[in-house]
Amino acid sequence: MFALEMTPGARGTAVETLYRLVDAVGLVITVQGSGDLEQIVGDIVRAAPRLQEDHEVGASGLITSRVGLYRVVWGALKCPGGSLAVLVPLSGYEGQNTSDWTRHFMHEVLDPIQALSTRGYSVGGGGNGRVTRQDFCQAFKHAHT
Image (cartoon, rainbow, N blue to C red; front, side, top):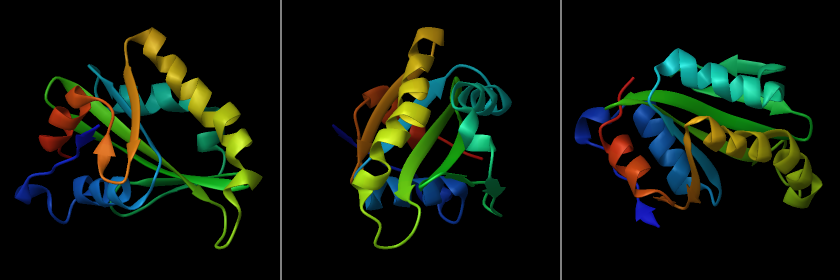
């Protein structure tokens, strides 16, 4: 596992928000590709269409998708050579047992996103401030909105 880093210039941006999410939660999905932001967002939504059913785009550009019993907070950033995205599954409400929604999340979001690896994307994971792919870690360090 590799510690996720950001530059001081990323403070106050969506980069910092995603950085803090990765640091705060135990499970994230990382996606990296050579296309632009529109392409990575479009491919993620085509792979896991439930992400677009009930969603809000916040002022920072991050998306909160409400999918049945859970939420996914996610966003995409530009990086050298393409773009990257971080998806963070969260309970639908405070105090909810994660076992109530984990199976649904795996079927509706995790498995379809992992399948993007057959379409040229680098897909990994992480949490608690760390990610599984060193290339993602390097790209995130230079990511911007």
